[in-house]
Length: 413
Image 1 (spheres, rainbow, N blue to C red):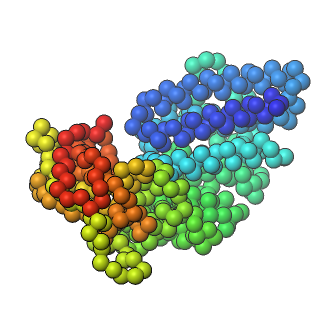
Image 2 (cartoon, rainbow, N blue to C red; image 1 turned 135 degrees about the vertical axis):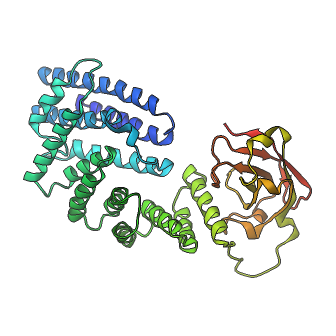
Image 3 (cartoon, one colour; image 1 turned 30 degrees about the vertical axis):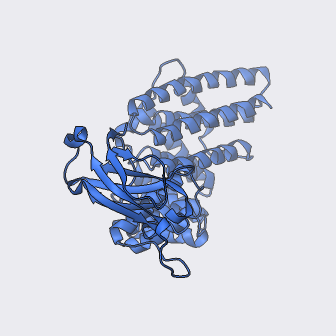
């Protein structure tokens, strides 16, 4: 492997670590800033290594120019926390992290391996990267704006450079400059009108620009994406979210169920989708569809008992707090098989869970010989567990058991 390829692989790994990790741990912005500063130093050291390789003849001038351009693009992203950390939009969690984990290597690969003008900045922008040398130096907002302006100038001369528009659009999105991101995504969609990835990212940016609302053109773009790729996970998620916001729970449920069929089974994303399915069913009063042949639910496909709140935690719960009572497999997947909603003021309460309360037709109580019964006081009111929620779990019990006692006795970290 050449020195240039090694550098390309290293920088791609750094990009993934910097972008995906904050999405999965968005509650620690201070740590993210420190991490970004550390990696800026790495990028500066990489520039020095590139110069040394050029002088030694290991890299050609073309390879050196492309690598330096990529370093400056990385510098734009590394400067982002200092320029706009407080404006970061609500994270999209594992789903967005997965999209970036795929997208960043793809863009980096195209940048390094495609001949001709790469995605990033003009040759004169190398001077700004060289002036940025020195340990501990921070890029100023003026320097960031100047580098972006040079990208804009290149695109003004080459308006059909789809890769350049892609980098510019996603850079503006990362910097929270949503109107500019919309403009760049519009140009990218002009060049790739049937690309589902482009259309969904365009819809996302447009929604952010109009106050996080998907109404109107964003949903038109989402529908175009689904026409191009009916299984596109981000388009399905955006369509489901829009339907939930409109309180069209039946439509939302349809999109969530389509998404559940394409995400990896047992993954965190699958669990998040299952929670959204449960929320849509609960909000819309929609039960799971009956089996193909209607038949009485066997007695063994139920589990019942009582749920109570430990006195030591009574002060931590409000009477109106939501309580989710659920059963999940004793082994393997943690996705709930049946779920029912109550409130703290109902406790202690008797419960009975059965197949009619399933969140997905292919995941029912009757499919598992043993289950764990749990109850959770959801402080945020959502089906997905959050730190500070109160929870209690039973020991594994046989499906069909009655008299199962669940005590909510611990606080989730």
